[in-house]
Image 1 (cartoon, rainbow, N blue to C red):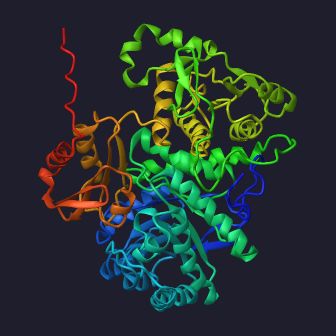
Image 2 (spheres, rainbow, N blue to C red):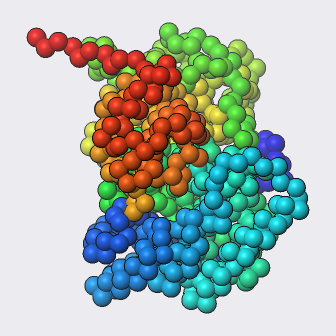
Image 3 (cartoon, rainbow, N blue to C red):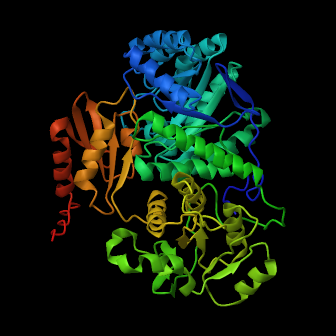
Amino acid sequence: MSTSPALSYCPDLYHFQRRQTREVIVGSVGIGGSNPIRVQSMLTCDTMHTETCIEQTMELASVGCEIVRITAPTVKDAANLEHIVKGLRERGCQVPIVADIHFKPEAAMEAAKWVEKVRINPGNYADSKKFKIIEYTDEQYTAELGRIRERFTPLVELCKARGVAMRIGTNHGSLSDRIMNRYGDTPLGMVESALEFARIARDLDYHNFVFSMKASNPKVMIEAYRLLVARLAREGPDWNYPIHLGVTEAGDGEDGRIKSAIGIGSLLSDGIGDTIRVSLTEDSVHEIPVAIAMVQWAAHKAESRGPQFALPASLSYDPFHYSRRASQSIDRAGARMGGEQVVQVAIRQSKFDQVAHKLDKLGDFKPDFVFESAGIVEVDPRDESAVAQLNAGDTTLVTVADGLDLPVVTAFRLLAARLDARHPIVLKDTLAPSNDPHAPFLKTLLNGAANIGSLLCDGIGDAILVQGEEAPGQALRLSFNILQAAGARIFKTDYVACPSCGRTLFDLQTTTARVKAATSHLKGVKIAIMGCIVNGPGEMADADFGYVGGAPNKINLYVGKQAVKFNIPEVEAVERLVDLIREHGKWVDAPSAPAQS
């Protein structure tokens, strides 16, 4: 079970139950309470371009976005929110507007005059990050909290007076030096950062706020939100504030959707989350169908809680600290799995037969073994006698049988809790294999990523089988991409890429494409592409190299968290990034394209 027995973030980890919260009102939209999960997005344009902001907002609203966020990096930008909101209301668009604030309390004060909600980041609202190492005494730390209270109180009082909502939104990438030096770059530091600001708001009898705990690493994001909810529950029943979910810097395309589904889906499946944003390095309108599909997926979860059954005495994992389940390594069907081995990818025999003639063309997406050849025992995890029989026998591969009336995550959590840890487990994305070649791929992708990805982030799983996708090549690609996004098997270049906004200092979509074109053959190298410094250094904590906007048309290059090249002209920056990778011994030339006959 958890190493933190006093903490609990979910009353029942085997049966869906949505977390009950108070309602927070944002304009005409209610968050939490009995409201449905709300869908948000953010504008990508300059906040001073009033007409473009109005057009982008109306376009988002037309495809189902319920709340729109706009960056306000300066007081001047914040003041222009008056004209944006006025223009929207004159055109009949009532979607609530949120001002996104970093670094400048003065901008927050101006924005709160015009918008329905203000998002502040505790990591930089009253602190400027200097990456200093300071040992704070308790007296010094208390003095810093007093300074924050002095800076934050005017905004709270203004929001309270005007009925403006607030998001206290911690980002893993922008924790303050004060928090970093006391708690480290950890989920605990993220939670403490937010709670400091929440206590000030509550002291002023202001409660119209929500929390968020965003990170680009799904494991960190999941652990931070769980810890936040557990801490709120421990504080008392009136700390039942709504939660906004999101994975920052998820990237684009299939990878961005998978990473978002893992982080958001894992929490939604446990009943956490009242509003979501899927952050993609694409035009914002492309985020909305993904977010809506995630909300629909969560609604289906709520409708299919599964039957009641005797609960195991404990979990097989600690929900607040990642550790891989300690199975034993065994050989099956030409693959070695379990123990310290990377998670393997299985394929059904019928699907293998369809791709057997072109295995050499599958590249990185070759299956590791055929499911039916591996001697896998399929079991109903509720059948305690069947599990006990397995536990009395030799180490073997085990999975959940198809056709059971159990949600996937519930079934595998139950199996992992009752099965001896030495037995490796094969995860499945669904217990009802697809026979529909026309099933929407987005639905398959989100379901597979949310189910398998969340289990992997809990340390459960030694092999995976995606059987919700009819096309075998596509199912294999999805399998490997889920493993990559969950950090379970890095088989290609890994990218952390933020979505665009008004703070972005270059065109993120075209730049990301250029960086990928030059580096996508570098297997196992992690590259961060960040539009500005708000989250840059922090979200690049585990990246090898970073490409960060430092000024208009100027790029700073990083090795890890350390900036090493400054103010490089954008036209030269990708080439200089390649040079930097080469300098650090991680460059290899791309393989030559096969000759055309």
